[in-house]
Length: 389
Image 1 (cartoon, rainbow, N blue to C red):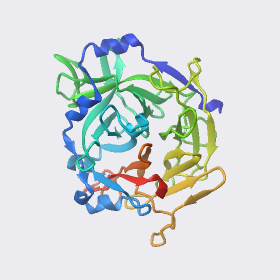
Image 2 (image 1 turned 90 degrees about the vertical axis):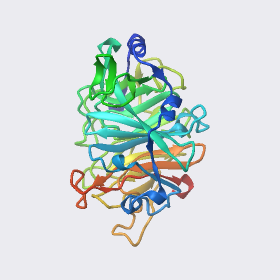
Image 3 (image 1 turned 90 degrees about the horizontal axis):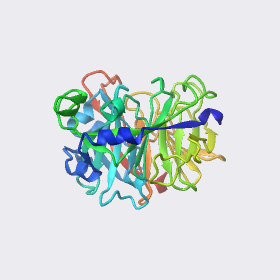
């Protein structure tokens, strides 16, 4: 448990205030009103995209990205959260949103703010994640692996990248600090005439982070774990986040699952630290599953998305409790319990509707090479009823 202890780091209020003072500070509503990408409904998705959906349970809803984002191999969709996490009524003000986190080779990270107010016409706008520098007089790319995200209150919690030298496992962003750039160029940061963000109109600067007691490792299941993903559990008191580590489904140990309590929304930092600046894990579990891309917890049950193999291979959804583990079976497939989506990433429960949302990540050639051509798009955003899992 000592290896799971987190240390809190807040970006100074002066730094955030300085950065806010140099750029227009806009809200979520402004970002949604400027949405410039449309998602395709299920009827307009390609066959390879629909094939990536779960075999069992059947998806209630399915959407595919616009043409450019469906095939890009530089950017990969992973972490997922929504206004269903942010507030118990599933709304952020008057809006319903889904947030999808994408990573560019662990050098940049962006979030799709998806306007979900009209289920028949989802649309989105990209927001680039950045790190404040020079005491708030500049910012730099957030070069991290956005494997998981949780939106709680006004805070967005994002997994950090192993090996970045900071030992930061989680970064914190704020919906109160979405800034609009003034210059459209390939530069990220301060330029003549204002600020630029590599063509993105909006940026979110980090307001804090949580570091581990040392460098994490994916070499074993006994040392400091690397955060692969994170999700929200509203069935605990207090509410909590659930994280998991990842090992290749081709071998290696089974993944650990660990939990941290959340503080009441509205504070400077989202995790409960008891005023000490350090956060202890409230639970540590050892699963019997390898290849866990993400884990969702609800009412003492843990749902683990297990990606296996390469392109066009369905994954496994494990339903785990401390007393038993089960999965759906699909007798017509080459693995009896490979019924889940193909390479499903982040999982999020929309609490007010009891719908589980997830997304798949692949865009590869026919041989499973994510850098090959021609590209076969397999990226799809979907939901299934929690009751069906």
